[in-house]
Length: 593
Picture 1 (cartoon, helix red, strand yellow):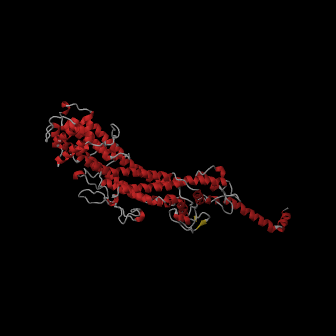
Picture 2 (picture 1 turned 135 degrees about the vertical axis):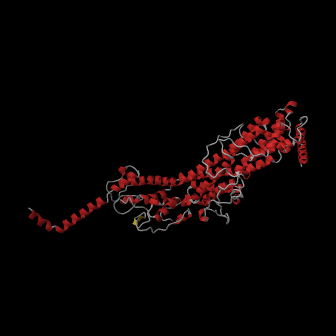
């Protein structure tokens, strides 16, 4: 039998041997190039339904993105799944990098607002203790006006449309009737009928009579200057959060998604699930996808520079801490001034309001309350309750908060320009001898690597950028407008230097940063001066007092909210004055000088 078969095989030998070898090679090749690894990656990365992946590679597959000659483990349905998956993964990666920056802005925004409320609460308690202890005769009726003053200041720091100067003057307008009937003429209530008409008249003439001397205007000016920088800082941090929200929810263009699929998943179609994209190739794809995001770089650098300057402004020429802690002293001096000039104030009020008050109080205070005021006006401010930090601690905590904020802010000045590079770092790419170029496995990427921005993408060989993202274009315009408005409102903002502690002159080495134009330390058009990064933890203390210790301060407990009594202050009354009012006010002012 075997001999009969062998001659038959021998006679057909070359043809059958060749056919057997070809069949064996095809079987081996199919086994080596199966879709098992592709199915595993498809399942692990949760790309889509597993049944969309074939068991073995197919031929003549009509693909739209991952086109190549030869067998493929991809189908049209898989390409659709890859597009959804790559969009999800890319946006997740962007969010992972922007999360820390967003957390930095939101966390410090809350921390600054909490610290502002601490200072307001402390200053309000300080002023209330002055009225209750020194001016007890008017404290019960004056405390609602104190609450209204600090409630309005709190709203202002949170961005409400409130005028600080109008609020302060309204406070003194409301205080004048109480001062006139309780301090200047303490017996007036027993001699005449004191009604609403008299109180209204006193409120209307307060700024013309000027019973509190220069102290009301000085207090209004100091608070407006100091709180303006703090309010603008809060608004700037809110603006930064809006920018971050817009970038997190950006939409990727169709050309971008195709480029990402080609970079991340087209290698899977050939069974190459472990190969990584080349670095230059990844940069081109990411810079094309994030071209509109990169356009935010210049306004963002200017924005971060303004954040630094606003933070320095609170520490320096517009010290929010000292301005709020000085409210008590200004009110005390204003009340003392009114008592010392009581006869002149009474004479003017009699002429304007037509009041018959009898014998006014003398030039020197005689009541027990007034005597106490004279004695205690030059003494140090009383200590706060043991449960609340001291003024030095407020200043130390706010200084530490500023220092930490500026230190972290330095890391993110070039965030939007560096985002494509961050997405092309680590395990996402490979810079070895072999990498994926989008079409094949190569030793190195030979395409031209373009820069950031819309203009540079004209030469991008991987992603076509047809038009800017309208949402991000609007964000850019809004940020530029905010920067311009901030600069116009604070024209000397860049000239303000950090306020160092008296006699210290030391600079923390950890907070001094060397930087150049590329790091965003100087925005275009700012001139040669660079932003100083002096340690803002070296703070000058009120009246030259030093902090109680060198230990770091813990995060303070959230203080009680400032009560709102009577709503927001109304506008200052503006009515035409009679000739008698003007003459009386002029005579009073001339007599004082």
